Length: 127
Image 1 (cartoon, helix red, strand yellow):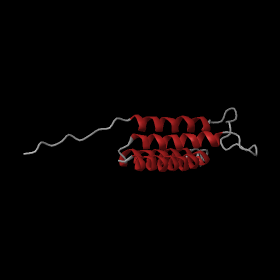
Image 2 (cartoon, helix red, strand yellow; image 1 turned 60 degrees about the vertical axis):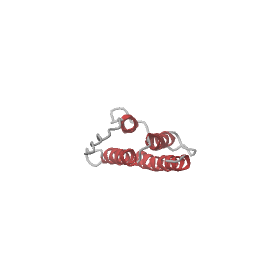
Image 3 (cartoon, one colour; image 1 turned 180 degrees about the vertical axis):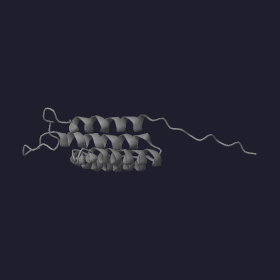
Image 4 (cartoon, one colour; image 1 turned 90 degrees about the horizontal axis):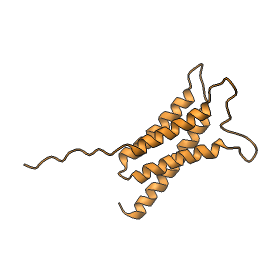
């Protein structure tokens, strides 16, 4: 793959990762009954995207760019906004810490997928 094509792939992977990171960060605290639906859907969506990038693109840099986009979006939206609003609030005492769980889960997903070794099928002998 040529360098311009590789750079475009990295930029697109970074943007896609950032979009999924924002969506996951905003929706992760959704709970229906006792089931953390938002956390489950956000983790599955981000894992699905980064796995798709890993399986479809031979370049590990694109996978890393996708993961960096996800984690950067998480960090940007976890802080206090210009108006003082907080998207990922700190859990009250006695409540489940969804924000910390989402941060650790997303980081683990990115690290596992980026670090997973590449397996190649053995070449068949001609003849």
